[in-house]
Image (cartoon, rainbow, N blue to C red):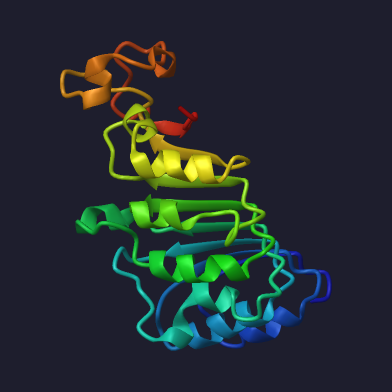
Length: 221
């Protein structure tokens, strides 16, 4: 398959051989830690030509049982990755009561060895540790960071979070976004919406629909 440029698949035998497809640039991989997980990790170690990768974790408890099955670390093995876009879909982890998604530590370890990474999207809850771990020194090319939530009530609440402003001050070229209501529109408001500052973040919906949360770019103070 010399002309293969995009692939969407789950764990399957022989996947490591696909790394030999030099034109392959994008893959969406459905993660399951079964008998083929090591094969998939080996594929990611070899496929340094990838530009875009999406990892879809099928279970909210999905965490590599062994280091040689850690797909995030596998990406960074050589330090020669051309990866520019990485998406981790661990959205259901929010139901587990954890402070952050299970792959967070692996991601922090991998970032310095992904020198071309420009866009990082985490569909899960991230802690302050991730935000504070993103710096120009270990993610020099990163220009867009999207995190589903950082454990706040709204994007306005995120604006005033100390770790968010440290992230933005340390990375002047970075755009940070989170998937929240832009402002608290009900009586159960965060402290900042109660104060009523940053009215420019309000939307015209009054109040918005329950499920009208969207990606909101957090401004710098």
